[in-house]
Image (cartoon, rainbow, N blue to C red; front, side, top):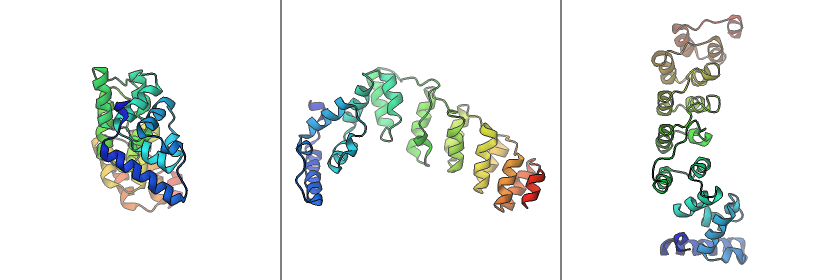
Length: 241
């Protein structure tokens, strides 16, 4: 049980939060909320329940922000200590980070492969250098740069994450997936740097749908860039003007 214990300082903070929660609610904490921290974390691990931290503010403070030792044991217990499966499922949680990945590898004795596995969408939700570094590590283990249907590249283009796009392309992502959707979303957002990367560096051919999206938004500089790289307006595009 000792592996689940907090440090003295963390334990004091946990007790203080429980008191503050009780004061805020003007009521005594429930018996369950008064359990010793090590017992509460043991219940959390054994239950394998991702919703338990959401039961109350006390549980949220105690479990959602619990030490990585507890998170690691919780992930492993959920999948009966099958390391590869626990890692694959663990990546779906936003708390998963490079340190936890290293812990998995240390316990496994070597880097765990993720051949053709889909990367969770939340890894591409924002321009975060830490997430980018983690994605690169996962791609190096064989994770798919495509699944599902080019989403990683398209989402990265949508938020303007050039470093992530370059890494995905380096590991084989198709920059023309979903009918040039990555080019279309960054063109429609007037991201000239990204558009020039797709057109000049990757040699993507602009299509009439991308051109039409820019015409509808009156992005005439972008329209000129696309036409200069070979985009040909069709009749429906001309009718948009």
